[in-house]
Structure formats: C-alpha cells, structure tokens
Amino acid sequence: MSEIRINIPNAQIYGRLQSRYVDIADMDHDILEVFLPVSGLTIDVGWHPEFDPAGCFRIVLYRDFWQDQVRLPIYTRDPFEVAQIVRALAEEYSKGGSPINIACSGTTTGQQVQMISIAPNPYELVG
Image (cartoon, rainbow, N blue to C red; front, top):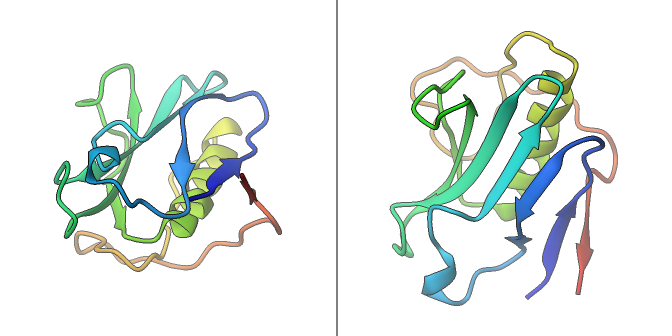
C-alpha cells in the first residue's frame, strides 16, 4: 500500500491518501483534510458510507463548518482521481477564484461538468 502525496503550497494537510485501501477500518469519514489559509476554506475527503466497501470517496469544500459547504460534494472511487480533484480545488480556491466544475467517474448530483486541466504530476507515490 502506497501513500499518494499531494503537494499543495501554503496548505495545511492532515491525514493520508492511500493508492489502495485493504483494511475496512481505514475507510472512514476522516481520510484527508486540506486547509487553504488564503481563502479560509477546507477540502475534506472521506469514505461514504463509512466502513462500507461498496462506498466511495466524498470530497467536500467548506468554510468554517462542514455544514457550510461552498459547492456540492464530488464522489469517486479512484484515489488518484481524488488527488487530482483535491489539487485542482486547492489551486482554484487558493487564488480566490470562482467555483469550478470537475468531471470525474463518480456521481455529480446532476450538475453539468466540464474537464479542467491538471498540472503534470500533481501527486507522487511514496512508500
């Protein structure tokens, strides 16, 4: 099992994103949290439903409190896609930009989405 390292300048990152989850105990609501001090926003990554192998990653962007979400959650089952999405959200919201749409393999709750460009090698495997 390898960690996917997400390099985000000026962000405070808590938790670890793995390339593969084997232990069901690791599939919880608190996988990764990225605080963006410039915008005061937090990107939260968790597994939903918690401890359910049929679940998926849920990526939420919020201000101050989890219930104060700035955009609809994004869902995917691919940890590498999670890394790309987190990186893209961090880049956009660290600049104080407007909301972006991200196409991913998970549900988009009916939103129309478009592809965004991701910088080459936004993450690296370690371990």
